[in-house]
Image: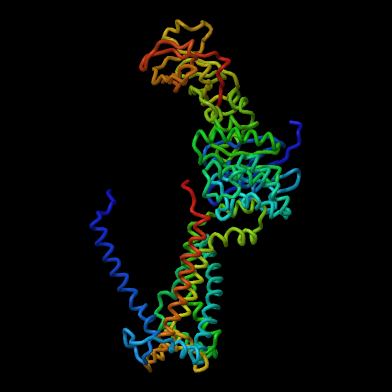
Length: 354
Length: 272
């Protein structure tokens, strides 16, 4: 990329007595982007965020904010915004006082504070709640106050640690839309931590997939979905069927049959990853399938679920579980327990080391 | 499980509770009518009423000096013990050292050691250092006695205190001292104020260790009362007792009906 990074993490590591939380991370964050750290719990995504915020000291590595070293600077001098999972609003202060708190630290005059608070509360649509205490607000309202408090001083980067994690689904989806709008309006850089891949895909310009303290892959949601570099990324982003086998002499075999897929993998254990919408379902003979579907496997239907736009089949095969999403017009008349042929085009399969 | 109490049971429980409450409190409150007696004895109920024992109290320099001394000592003890106790509780609460448990246990020993033993020990030490009969000596001893109560009170308020608020304050640009003053102290203030009340009351009615500490030049109010009640039947002591009880009740009343409701108004989280 040609754009200059706003934040550069170089060889960043954090280890505790008996474990490594963050393992040698290199990452360039671009100005104005919405970047999500996605990964299971314990993958190091929150620790990385805390390292950037200054709540945790790195064991090794460096961080450069607009080219200036950050790692020695105390948290309260970094001028970054942080939104916490459990809001962390000051319970003894009203909404206005909470939002004005960072402005007071920055010695804004009373008039400027009042104006800035009014503007930001309008942005998060909480003008009417200015004189309430946090305990008098719902979870979603509290998180919007926390967001207002973290953006009112226009920090160059806003860090968010699973901010919607404590809210119910409907509220979460609405707040995701609000976050996208606020990100567009502010134009500043957002770094967002979540374990929810759907949320990551909804919000992010780019996603960094974390696993065991490392970044497995970084890219747009589409890149990660279409071209996963590792089996972990393939399984974590979206649904997929994984057929396990091994590479010998550059050929992939599973269950005694040869399959083809894109990607090159060294000899050894390997897997074929296929997305649900790329799979077709037919009777055992494959009589309803086009003849060029040369990659197929026989399995038993475990479950059939109607998902509105089509049917979702879960099929047990000898080489692994398959999930097929078949549009309504191509759905076949089958039942749970039936043996079926699951087939796909070789170019739709991704060959990955297992 | 059915936690409903039957109406009959409720009445019986109410009667028993009221009886125990009266049993416990009535003997204390008898000093109020007694202090307004016109007799020179502890006759109860009084045959005639007057304020002569209050006059006697406030015109006798021995009583007023003792009251002044106790007030000065109690106030100093409340301030010093609350400050030290708050710092101690914070240190114990935040220390990751394995020693913090031991430190806490040591902090609480003044509660366990019988005051008469502590008094004897302190007396021999204070004789050598000329601290007997000084305000400074009294404050020193009473701070020791009051410290564990402050530590307990502040510790209790720290248990409901969310430390991520400090991270939030830091991220918003507040340094450690600012965070302590604007976030930590306001939120544990109920505990600190409870500690102030406990410390003041502990000092203000302390009579056992004080026995070793008083000198003709420096009397405290509880010591004057103790001497008075053992040597004379002068109802001035009833007036003194009523004043002490009034002060103590005022302190607890302020805490219970002013401090607690004030903090409850802004806190009390919604269910998460």
